[in-house]
Length: 337
Ligand code: UDP
View 1: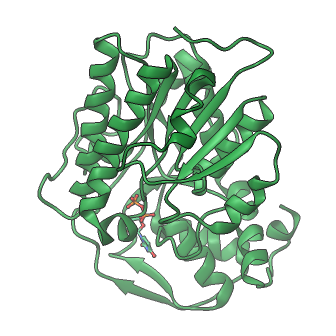
View 2 (view 1 turned 60 degrees about the horizontal axis):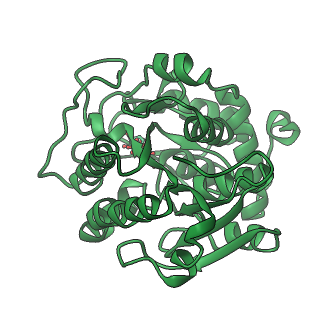
View 3 (view 1 turned 180 degrees about the horizontal axis):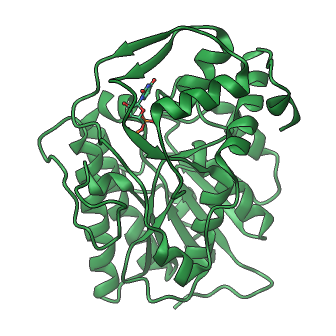
């Protein structure tokens, strides 16, 4: 069904390509020889992510919101489009909850527009879904067959249910033979190019520690997450897109090393060399108590597992944020990253 060959892999459309993971993915696809059309509404993207890509041969930026029909700058290149990656959606809880209606529509209507593009172009389509489809999980670690424990009425539902519906659409397109589909469920990802005001725990803790601001821990900090460095996530996405699996099942992509938020704080303190005070804030509504991917499927199908240890990734991310914020790092580990 796909039409690329080894010499000319064609155009990859990356919706959300100016965002944190999207900007790394655009770079990786350019390095693999793709032309890249990045479609982004710049709602949560860092403008400098885009500036770093814009000079690259083969890169085109299209300022558009996937909630609306895709503009001619995308559709008129249909004949060359071989891959459609959908990463479009605010992904940090404060940002996706700021305009919940738009968040839900981005996942559902945006995915529909991009699937229609893939169908018309006979291109392969990859949806970045999320570990949030498991909600506050009763099964640990989370396997793909687990159907999740999501509140459909709470403040996270706009994101969680939007992604669940987007998966439904994608698998219906696949079942109907309308598009070749891949679905990745991404667990927490971190690294350079995150927005300092993103609101997620890694960016918050690193930026607070670097600037000497009080460090915000929600609840008692005993909740767990599993943090995957962005280069590993991007490697997993490209492997999944390029694999010849039948694509009828979602694939977890995340780091199975599970740590508490308090443990993350201790690592951040050691790397940044900070003794900034901690302020506790209430645990957000529906905040999952724990999260860890079972990556058996990704290992078996894609020969993929994360390579970057958490402390190495955190040190690299700290060094990057320090440069962005004009702050200094005390610890040799981060300076060497
Ligand atoms: N969190 C925290 N301090 C912060 C931001 C987040 O303690 O400044 C907690 C949050 O309540 C959650 C975990 O860190 O339990 C991960 O939050 P994040 O927003 O990064 O992503 P989530 O996995 O909840 O989507």
